[in-house]
Amino acid sequence: EAELKHGRVAMAACLGWYITAAGVHPAFNSKLSSDPLEAAQQLPAVGWLQFVLGCGAIEWLASQIRTREGYQAGDVLGASYWVDNSDEGWVDYQNREINNGRLAMVAFMGIFVQDLYFGNYGDQIFRH
Image 1 (cartoon, one colour):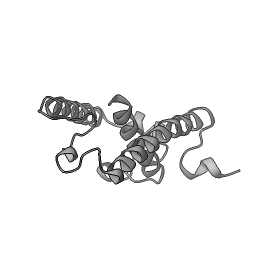
Image 2 (spheres, rainbow, N blue to C red):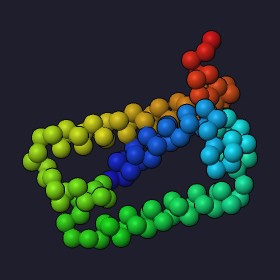
Image 3 (cartoon, rainbow, N blue to C red):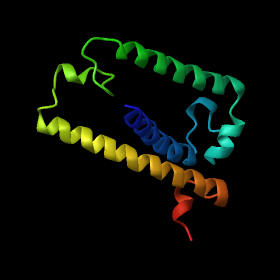
């Protein structure tokens, strides 16, 4: 279950990294840096508070969902109520999700290191 959750977070982080690198900051009228590492440093304390409380609320909700009867690992939305693991298409979907999550975890570390050590972020990674 932890690998699935980390994979989902990594997929969202990769998407968020490139959205930030494109200069999209709807909550701050694009006044933050397009470099995601600099934007994180420029984020006001209230922004970090929202982030931490939002993550905490999601974790609390997931812990409450885990206590329900018939819960299956990673099934936060209750899809197992409609589809079981005997459906080949569903199993294939689950395998694709976990493999894409694994790829996203490795990819995000590469994206992060590229920005941290070389200052390349967004589409700058592919420039020579």
